[in-house]
Length: 299
Ligand code: HEM
Image 1 (cartoon, rainbow, N blue to C red):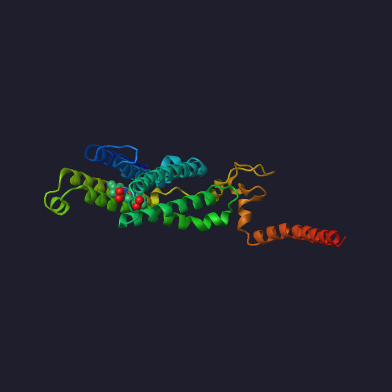
Image 2: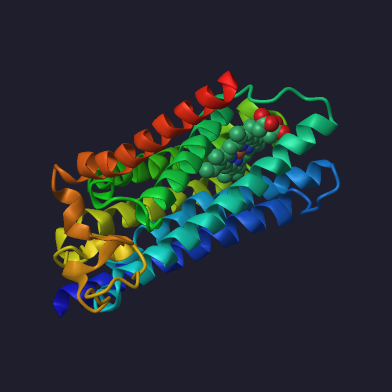
């Protein structure tokens, strides 16, 4: 009970920090940079930090801790997998829009693309994220994905998820630096000795982003806050297929493929067996087709 109270306090902190990050990045771009537009002018590039921070940091951070919320533990994991995937889809859309804001502007103004360290780290982050999303969808939500594949992919999915989050934080910090250096006049003297209010504000945004990241990693690192694994729960990723004698209410027998109980996929003989079952009639059919073609070719 005390552990879940501590969780909710930390979660509230996470919500507040996330909200502050979005407010700070929006205020910075509207107050000091002149606001937003989508018309090919420099105002268009101001969408970039707002969309990237809201998507790949704040929403992403909340999407990765969704399984840790204790009240979700009593519900089906499949429901929360859908919430996780849905939030990640939103992150994907925001990131693509955020990248379009700068790429489109660069094309319009005939400026070079991907010239800075920030852009290199950033583009790698987004490419890895797209790859992770597609693979995660295929492995954990498609009903035809076998249980052994999900089990094998889970540690890599978790590791890659952490790496993407670290890279997102690094992209934001380097992006803030790049934007300040591009925008603030008389940069070296101005930023080193008498930082203008804008630079202080942007630096504070960076601190907020790091603090948000640390709280998310804090939640992820606590074993007590992990969703308790129910036996064969990972097979719940598949929707319940109407198989005779198997009901969706019995997760141990919940099927991961229309004709097979999930546990059957673990048997080493299952896959070769199915391949043989499929291959033998096909080979017979192929043999008949070749004979038929040969005979008709002769005529
Ligand atoms: C996860 C977060 C982020 C990612 C993945 C990302 C990615 C990128 C990429 C790929 C580019 C290159 C675009 C091009 O070369 O055409 C870029 C440019 C840029 N980004 Fe980011 N970014 C992120 C966050 C931020 C943030 C938070 C800021 C500032 C607060 C920022 C500021 C900039 C600036 C100033 C440019 C150069 C724009 C220009 O030259 O006109 N980025 N970003």
